[in-house]
View 1 (cartoon, rainbow, N blue to C red):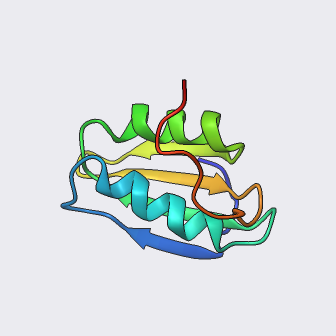
View 2: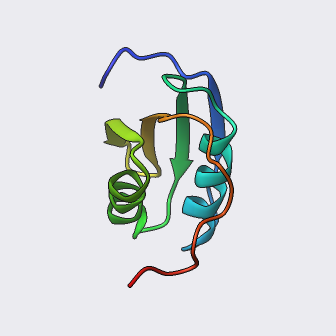
Length: 90
C-alpha cells in the first residue's frame, strides 16, 4: 500500500453502485489538485467503478487494497470540477 496520506476520508461502506462513485466524485470535485481522497467501500463493483471514474475524470487512483471486508482506494484529485457535465457521452 502506498504511504500517501489522505486529506479526506469517504466512508461508503454499505452503499451500492452507483452511490460510492457518485459520492466520491462529489468529494473529489471539492478538493484542490493533488489532494488525496481515501474511499472505503464494500460494493463488489467498486474496483471497476473507481478505475472508470479516474479514467473519465483525470483523477489518479494511486492505491487500492482489499482487507476481506472493504476496499480501500486512494485517489489523487485532478482539481475542482467546473460543475456537472453531460449526463452521458456519445
